[in-house]
Amino acid sequence: MSNFRTRVKRSPRSVAGKRAQRAGRSAEEQVLSMAALYLQRGHAEVIKRYEPFARVSKSAAGAWRGVYAGPAGPDFEIWLPGGKAGMIEMKSRDADRIAISAIDPYQKATLARLTRGGHLALILVRLRERWFLIEYSEWEIEYRKSHNAATLVQHGVEVLMSPEGPDYLSALHTLLLTRGG
Image 1 (cartoon, one colour):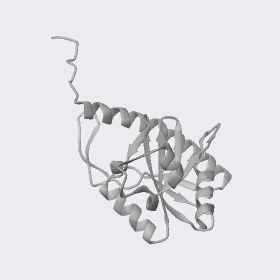
Image 2 (image 1 turned 90 degrees about the horizontal axis):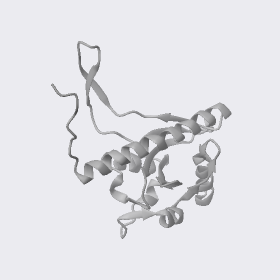
Image 3 (image 1 turned 180 degrees about the horizontal axis):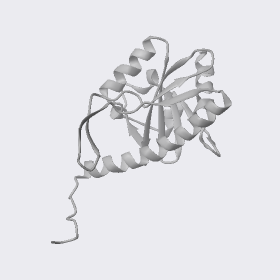
Image 4 (image 1 turned 135 degrees about the vertical axis):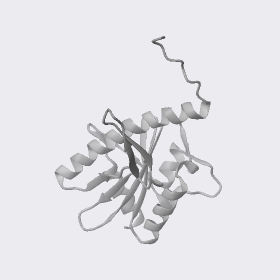
């Protein structure tokens, strides 16, 4: 019996997806680090929303087997002092642009519903090492297929980095001031 594994040949799309997943995990850790700081200071509560998942069986070794139980909504809830609240979808790319279609239909529907209700509906984007915050109402531009740093700044704000991570709460305050909210 051989002790080596045969390497699974992956399609270019699968490789790109795996790379995006790894980049997203690192970016998410930074967002959560800032969330802990915001909570500690009493500035906001940012809560991670996990993928809907159902346990279907348990192996003899004690590991659970599960399946996705439905479409995933935005990644985070945000609660501000004074009652303003909403959701944040985070996207991370090691590229210079992000496709507008990166937000899936279920996430779009959730963010659109929040927008109609007057709640925060935000998209936090990391392109390489730069971060941006944009309202969902500004995300879909009919004549564009993707956003780059220039369009994200034009329709949203760049998020400044603090020693702890991306200060998306300060960027949100800037965004709210510019739109008069």
